[in-house]
Image (cartoon, rainbow, N blue to C red; front, top):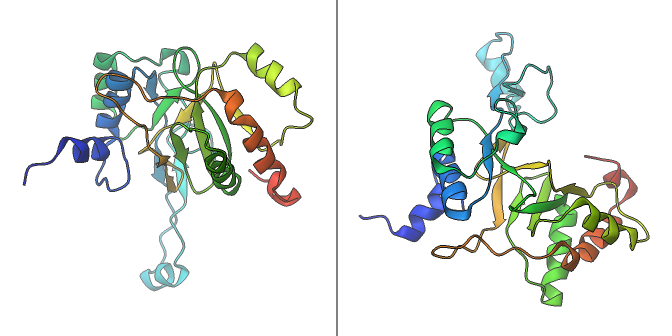
Length: 240
């Protein structure tokens, strides 16, 4: 049975319902289709453990620990950060992107935020879900949302450090769990695996025939993100 264009795009971008490894295809589509600057990052890999009897391994029933391909022992972001090439090398040139993932097909897929491409604001997953519900109730149009079991990231229109500073200055308090991904930042995109968790689109990019996905201004979503972060318990606010 012939695969439809919509189904093929969902598979390539790691959208719900996709199967298999789609990193090279997704990287190419983000760059060539959306004009997003991407680059390959480090890769997660199972950590080598001492040999133990099979019955002991079965009884333990624990997920295999994950290490990073970078040289840092116990890397806190296995497979979710730049390595080689460095972040400034990020590009939307489809030829370069295709070559990168031809050489390293399992490399993580990173978005270089800011510039002419998307920026982002991320927060813990429970607060992210709460913020999206609040935005929906207000009828605020949101853009793509990248999710892992730990954190959600809302993609927004690019903002400068000065614009962000003015916006935050007007707020009484900003939760420390809120993170801003602007110029010089990066974000793992689906279907990258970060540690033991795979990223996915909580809200997928709304793609057109020739245009990049629409992105909201950060000023239209910041109040709900701050309120959702503030509603977290102190223990949650002190967490990752």
